[in-house]
Structures are given as C-alpha cells and as structure tokens.
Image (cartoon, rainbow, N blue to C red):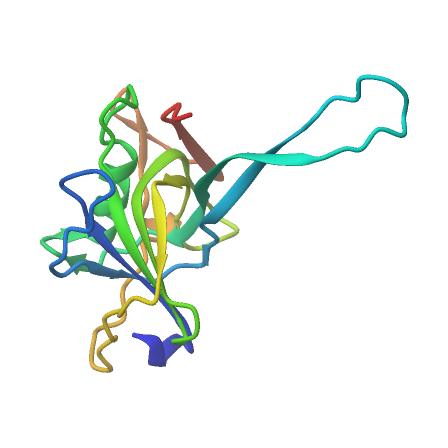
Length: 194
C-alpha cells in the first residue's frame, strides 16, 4: 500500500484482550493522515514563599501517552470487518468509559524510529464529512499506557489492494424515516477518560 501514496510511515493496530499487553498475532494496516501519539510530561512548579529572587524548580509529576489519530473511513476489510467498523466500534465500545476496548499500535517511521504503543483507548472522537471534502474523516484523541522502541513492524505488501474511502455523497441521513439533505455534519463522542 505504501507504493501508491508514497507513504514513508505506516501504522498497524492490534486488538488487546488485556489492557496494555501486546496480543501478538496479526493486526491490520491503517492508512492515516495524522498520528501524533507520544509521551507527554506534566510538571509542577513550586510556589515562591517570599520575594522574587527565590530559586524555582520544576518537578515531573506524571507522564502520559496521548495524542491524536486522524484518518479517512475505509471500507477495506481487515480481520473480518471493515477498517471503519474496527475504528467506530473501538470509539463506541463502552459509552460509560469504564471498559473501553484497547489496541496496541506499531508505528513504522522509515525504519528510523519504530515504536510500539500499548493500551491505547479513545478519550473522544469526531466523525465528520461535508460536500466540500469528498471523504468521511474520523479523528480520535487517544490515551495509552506505554511506549516501547526498537520494534519490528510488519512490511506492507506491494500487491495489497488500495483501500476505498467512504464518501460524503454516499451518506444518507434520515429523520423519522424521511431522507434529509445536509451540507456537512460532525458527530462527537466523549468517553470521559481522565
């Protein structure tokens, strides 16, 4: 798949049965527009007690794995379901946010900085489309458990079929059984993970 779009980076997702443990086996390739999941550090700065010349310091209080995944919705089938169905059921796996499904992700970055992200869960997501942009897009805010480096990422097959995107013109919206014409839409889901 990398040959038709010139991608130097690709992503493979693996459904986890236990949160934060790599399941092994074969995942599925996900063509993506943006993936910026990385460890982010939260620091705390000490308060000044007297005067302005007191020495300040920052202390790391926690580090979390978080970021965004954005991609078109694809009808291409992988592991028995379409890629769109995998991603939407991941986002909607538990509306109360208690037992969301988790995925491991292998990110291939030209063989230079390959990574494994464990325990990724969607904190929120947005599905959008419009007449101005032909394809439907899904944007997920992700939080994870851990990042590991130096992993082997599955190679892309040069004969793999090009995935087909869902288009806005193919979407039909109905209200009380009657079709309604829309110019654009956006559906947001918040799973309230903290």
